[in-house]
Image 1 (tube, one colour):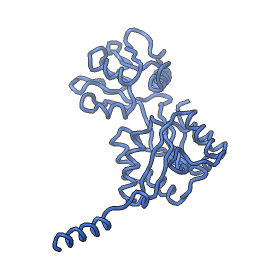
Image 2 (cartoon, helix red, strand yellow):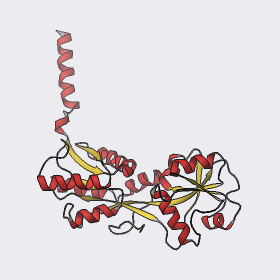
Image 3 (cartoon, helix red, strand yellow):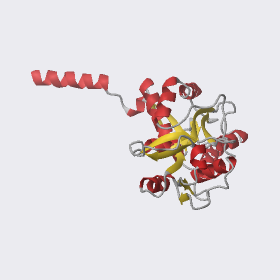
Image 4 (cartoon, one colour):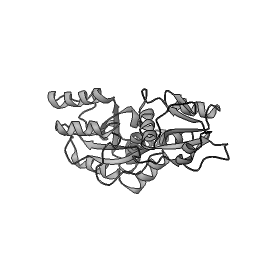
Length: 274
């Protein structure tokens, strides 16, 4: 009898502390893989303050993401078995602008939550590092690891910055060119270059091996702005507004800074790399 009582109490207690999955409200974000880090971190932070909400993220790139959203809007179907889309978080604001033109996202709902800047990095063990990007460019003895502008957005942004700073771009013996950020960091750490240029989040991911000595500067500082917007058929606009508002809180800013992202610009912003 005592055992039966214990089991009954345990069963009742389990009902009070556990919650079936269907009791949670879903918030679906259609996002680009390039913003997986910040979007997932912001989603977990939001869930911590909204225990009855579970954020689900569907990843797709560029045109495919746009096609998926247009299919949902034009055919009125549910999204990959998860329900309607609530928010859209592409890798750059150009897609949000196009979706607004088609009225697939609600105009005026875009909220910028982070910026991504180029940074100058050196091996953590290096003592005598250049104090700025200008100093690195002036000293012809300094070898600079960069990404290929034809293969990656990092390379393209680096090329634009070099040209805005009066350089001919990543050409000549002093530039060590790699395919992407991973190649830049690998060549830097293996002694093929003295400094490297990567995006802020790339540097944070390798914080134990490299350190940031400066952000880039030039006539046109290449900064990419990341934003989210509310999908037109969002089934719970109040919940979407709460998520978008949470993107601009001090807690969100601190979280994003820890991942290597800069603060959002004032207003809704846009892709400033042109």
